[in-house]
Image (cartoon, rainbow, N blue to C red; front, side, top):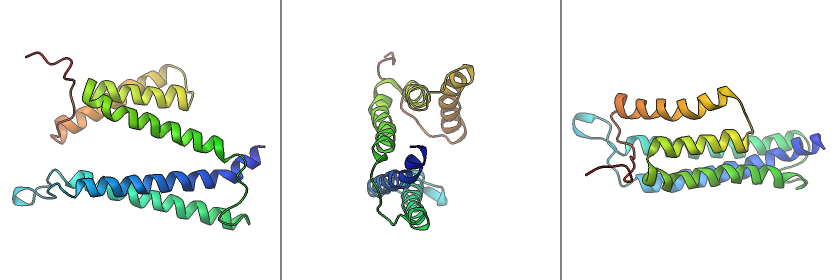
Length: 166
C-alpha cells in the first residue's frame, strides 16, 4: 500500500503544480495593472506581486514536468494507475482551501491574526504536528513576516477594521 501511494504521488504533484501555474498566471494578469517601477527606478507596487506570480508560475510548471519525468522514469508513463491519488489530491486541496479562506480573513481581522490561523490550520490539522515548537512557529512566523514587510520593506499589510478606533 505504501508503494502504491508513492507511485501515485507524482500525479497529485502534477495536479498541484498545474493549479499553482494557473494561480500564477491569474495573479500575473492581476498584477500587470500595477506600476513596476516608481520614481528614480525604485521598485513600484507591481514589482513584488509580479515577481512572486512569475515564481509561482515557473515553480508550478517545474513541478508538473518533474512529476511527469518521474512517472516515465519509473516505467508508469505520464498517466498510470489512479488508485491512491484521491488522498494526495484531497490533502493538496485542503491546503488550497486554507489559503483561500485566509485571504478574506486578512481584510477582516488583519494580517497577523489571519496568518496565525492559516499556519495553525496547516501545522495542527494538515500536518498534525503538536508540541511547543509548533506553537512557537504558529505565532512567530506571522509576527516576523509582519515585522519584515512593515518595518524593513515599508509595505502596508492589512490591519483589522474591527479594532480600529476612530
